[in-house]
Length: 336
Image (tube, rainbow, N blue to C red):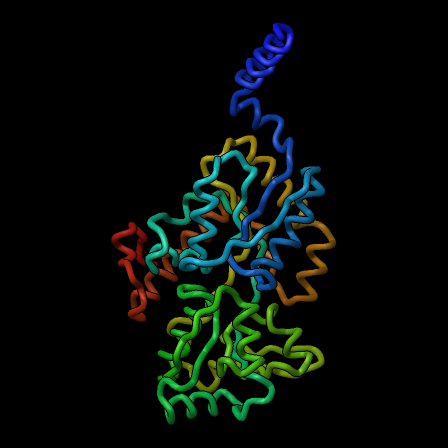
């Protein structure tokens, strides 16, 4: 018994001597978890599974991707990760939509609590079910004015980029549309296909397979130029018929992942390196080309600067559109 107790004491002594700094030097020594704040099957989820798989090859550990949707603008998942240890073993898969969590009342933090990595993004568009009687954007706007509040629109949760695009679309066209929030793009698109909602606003990367399969009918890109989708044809720009949309659009995606900003510098440096190598891989480049993603590759300071700009733009746009729950000024978010 004495020998056993001596062994236990020695083991505990060694463990106690392993400081956070020493642990950071051997990072990662076990598998990592990436908690995506949106539902499975959506754009943020897909991007995180692709980039995590490539980063795992560099770090020589598994990066297990899980989903924790809910709250406001991804606040449930972000809050969960923010409460974990800042040791680099729990990452958060996020998107530009998360920058509105504060002004939408989801949490009281800003995006500077994260050390971020931006993979890239894909432009948003408006689509309806292929079986819908609505054939064009003009038809949609006219139908919404004829039956105010009867036309329903599906998108990610309140404060998401897709919700923001919907608000800007409504203001720029005077369309009267009722917003139905979903925990992510995938369920919102399914709702449009089945007729549960009239229209859906998500990204081209997320919709393209449903469009090609003849399940969704694209009406317009929420960008200042049209888009030629191979095998489908030209999707017109909404700006052509409604130039006033340029007041708030277009807005770009910034999908990626992050670790707590207070993680050890050694940990952040290793994640920076793994991310850069993953972004340079043929797998990521080929995936992006096939799925209409523009790649970014920003991390650290560069990513922080981009998220600061998006946080400012999104927060004050929501304030201008009358949809912010909390004043950006109260959260210390400067005007763009």
